[in-house]
Length: 62
Figure (tube, one colour):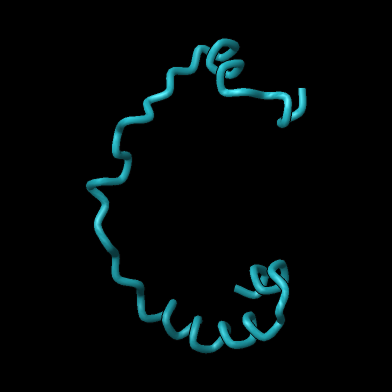
């Protein structure tokens, strides 16, 4: 069965899945400071990734 053939109702029925949609999943997660190495990496590589102009090579570079 291909992905496009699945529906939420079929998945719930076939796999006995219960969905909880009214719960805030990440409400207790706060902001995190980025490490210095990440900032340095982005300063060096972000201009090149941006200049490539296409999404896939940019993702691979970063």
